[in-house]
Image (cartoon, rainbow, N blue to C red; front, side, top):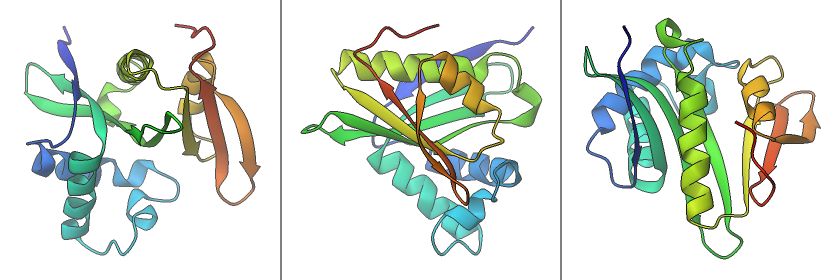
Length: 165
């Protein structure tokens, strides 16, 4: 039976190396590849730089497989705009082996609960059009606010509205 711990981590994180390894594992799951979306990414050191940025500047919802003590899911969000109270999700990913088991759902749920508790008003995310996570975002009430043929969708959730579960 799958046993997973879900945690919210505020900055800074002691998991930078683990996050960098995770990002390399999910690199090919993104369209375009995650490596192509990260500026100046050319080798594993750049994954480490991006992991360092996420570790120091974002809040992270993480999923850990308790049996193997492995990071299996990550949702990072920036919640540092205290003036407009808007948050942004730059990445959500789950290792392929764990998809379809509710991991992404739980990561999004605890992230939104955190943002509501902190009185944030809106959260946005950009994703490509064929990403299966769009259905999950829509389930929680995210609405498409931008449709870019080259870059996919920009979705937004008004946290003041009732959130579906």
